[in-house]
Image (cartoon, rainbow, N blue to C red):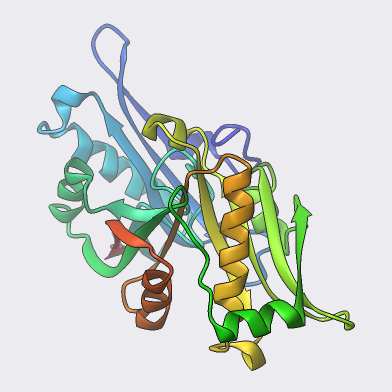
Length: 283
């Protein structure tokens, strides 16, 4: 579901290494993201979504050879810019298998893959901060502003919300998703919404039930007036009722307002993702 069933999966971009006994010992997976309208694949920019080798081979030259083959495939399809790892919008594969709430590039804690890209002239061009919030001890904020917001809005739930375009349907459509939103009372106006998905199968390996948070939106007119805080507070209460014990989200490290907002809600950083990029060679 996460890989081979994607209709834009190209077997030529999935490079497999075998030993003398025809046993698979590693692979690299190259691919692309969407064009600006998000209605088809765009090949000007490509990424090596994944490199995997047997544990005892990370210090060999096999990872570098796999990366070189991945780059050759991407350049052959017309890529001018090469990335390492998956990062939105280069997020067509491995959601739920690597990273967490979203694809983070290459995790800072993932030293073997970081070394492979670093020694092959990939440079960090951005950094993602990954944050988690424990819901077991969560208590929503209570103050005058939050009471005012509660009087003004209805908190509503939508299961399996419609995706906005072809690419988002391809990436998120098969996931178990739920959207919470605030609607102004006596008006048919949505003021804010947020979407969560069940981080599986990755969360099972963590030994907990986790929800990934993405697509948080608050109407410009209502930002910094407590609506986002109220929305997430009510969302976390509802998720906890459904057995979710942890919420994870991520944002760029340069997005200081978002990081401060999340920290005020009790989120704590647990890891970082590195956005690696290399300019493609002409030969």
